[in-house]
Image (tube, rainbow, N blue to C red; front, side, top):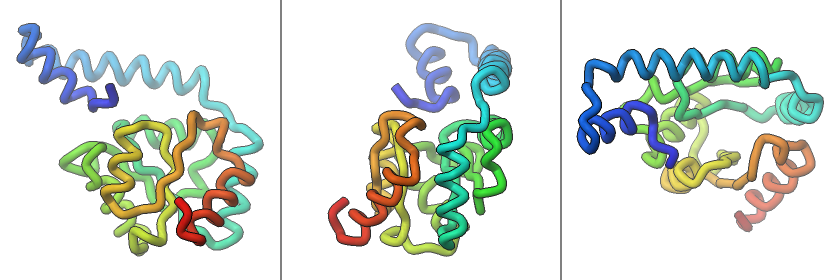
Amino acid sequence: DGLPTRDKLEMLSIESGLPRGLHGFINRLKQSYTEELVHARCKPLFHHEYCLSRLKASGYRLAVASNAVRRSVELMTEKAGLRQYFDALVSNEDVERAKPDPEIYLKTMGLLGLEPEACLIVEDHPRGIEAGRAAGGQVVRVADVNEVTIDNIQRAIELAEAGAL
């Protein structure tokens, strides 16, 4: 459903009587599983490295704005070999309200020194798409990370510049 873990846990406490004292334990357990998955599955992929290196070389400012916790965002970008391309990493710990609230995108745009209309937001989740649009950015939807290629991003940039997104 895309809700941050803290919101899901609060709902479980309200609806099913989950003791609030277990929220921290469940969060730690979830982070442990997430880290295991990242170590097992996050690997450098040529098409991502190529895409980001070309965009960076062309002068684009790049950032990650994720509903994940900071440690997960940092670990994923490091394990994928992509951290050096990003000017900013913004996590759910850096904002008060998670996606679909636009706060995370507005904060990221501010860190990059960019106006919303100058930003292309690549999103794979309905809550992120809603957040990006509410922030005033140009949003392109991808089904998954495999669609993040230089050809697809350049096509999206052309559509955004033409006002067709």
